[in-house]
Image (cartoon, rainbow, N blue to C red; front, side, top):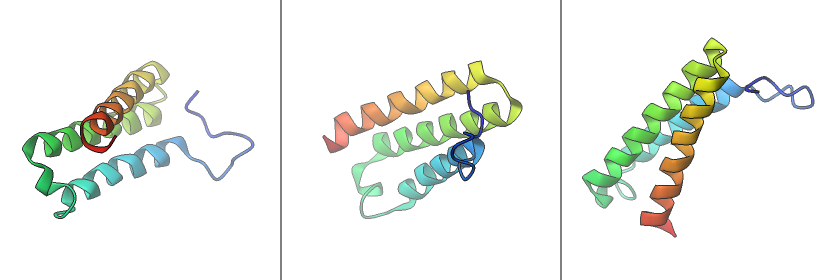
Length: 87
């Protein structure tokens, strides 16, 4: 439900989303592992970052439907990238 779990008070859903988009941003800045993969890869990192930013905004706005949509976009981005570049 995009709420802080009662059994994990240290987990903040909007903060988790923020860390996710920051991870995308920092991965794209890594010259040796990311920039060398080319523009298509970097565009994928940008799309993932944008989806994660939208996820954070939706969670903070209390819009669970939008959060679910943006989380789905993040999941798809991860799946596609791992298929093409990692697995």
